[in-house]
Image (tube, rainbow, N blue to C red; front, side, top):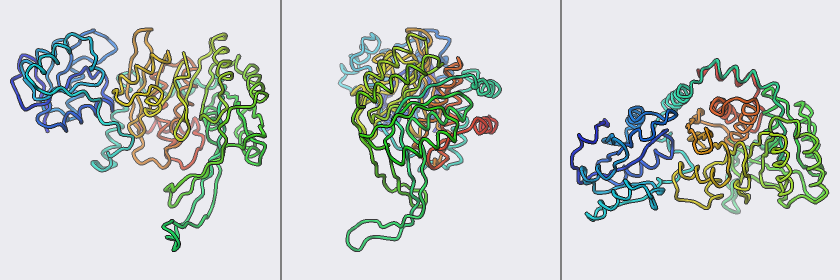
Length: 495
């Protein structure tokens, strides 16, 4: 399908069309969802594109945005507005349906209010929608792996070009990490992978029967964040709680092998969090977890706070990797924030709630938060807003300076603070088309963001590097630390 681009004075009436509207400052998965939904409603899809209203040098020009929209091949026609005069487009086109994002439901923008009024006065439909929310990718059903890989690489290269990031800049950034001092605090998890052979179905019940062949343990949770940081060349001290059991000895031994300074505090009231995954031919069948989720005993909590006071005040950055298993209590969090403010230390947060219950909105005034879309929606109790609006709401609620919205197989969007009222956004693709194990991508991303920003590097440079390490992380089965050399080699290959 060929998408044509015309100016507002060249457009004609099309009473069977669907009209979508927006600025589309940086094309990301949220915009694609919205436009796909508008396209599925029926008829010709016309996109009314807002002009260069604010003359913001950080944003793409209208011409650049229209060319990016054209490459999506979702719209039949792109109409270039002079400013944001949607009402004029409504009068000239007379569309059957006007589709707007949910953020426009209570809009106070006069151009939008007037357009809705005109559309409804002619008894034509106005639909508010953010696009279908999907957490699984269907991309491989429609394109070959080679096509997807090529397109994602192009998206990454374009994102780098837009932010003036060269291969040389990225490599120099990695080599500057050795002086960074990071403290990582959070839940320790041991992931055991059991390789199995499928025998068949049980004769007694409809149950798959497998034969366990071999097992291997991996350090996960906040432990793998610390491991990535150390393997990438930075200095790291790890603070966590483990049980008084054999598994805790495995953790202690592995951290020693990786030369990671640590303060592991033993708590007899809980086991070391242990998750066992059963695999057949690299496909996960199910997981069994051994854990306790209650908050720390007061004496254990005091020990954690004491270790934070000893180590964090001399750090360049503090990372909280919270899996909501009880380590990050209110008092522990308050102490971290206090030290961060007293010593002007950057603070980075990630809270993972898959089977657990938690909210990333408890992290206030951090330097960076890294939620996925589901976690953001849980925190805000918002299932309707588009990605852009959702991200803005979370930024406002938490007063975070920078945000990374993780989108699984669609990559992530970085929101970088320019000043108190302005943020710059950039989408980065997921570079790995067929991941082997996606469970460690977010931890690898958090590790790079914390080192890079603690080294006083720009958020966008660090995000590009985080995009690369996320790809390397999902190419392994189980959590394995990514080395500095592996990251450098990847960048040399992709750029």
